[in-house]
Image (cartoon, rainbow, N blue to C red; front, side, top):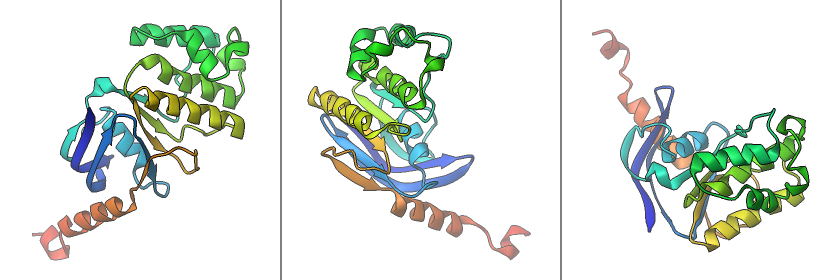
Length: 209
């Protein structure tokens, strides 16, 4: 099984940020997205997740295969860590909250209200939703923000375990997670989008005809 995109274009706010991007993701594969801030990493992930339409090209990435972890942790402050994961297990219709807690080292904090957790603990709680999703492709946007070195490795190990079971992951990150996989620099595709926009922009005389 694989997921493919051909000559994909992605836009944000009506502006095309990426163009001419083709990629293939196979079972067991990790793909790391690189590029400067604003290049379009988040926009690409949201497009792959099915949260926004592609601006062009073809995309064979069924939304039901995707589990997306954005900058937001997706947790309810008044619920305990265990209750938050039980809620998400109900949403996905599968998954064991206790296993998710253990995977991300949250078992000692299971009974605490999420709002009382540190930023790093809340981040781990948000990432633990991935384990509950039972979806083959994890799409993660800067997943290690607020994590220390120990828990960055906990996340990396979770990705390794997921891929060892036949899953796959696309990660936008600025740090080296020590994962075996491929790296995709989005900078050339942003340049292609900018060039296409300049080509299509009318000159002064054309604009006022």
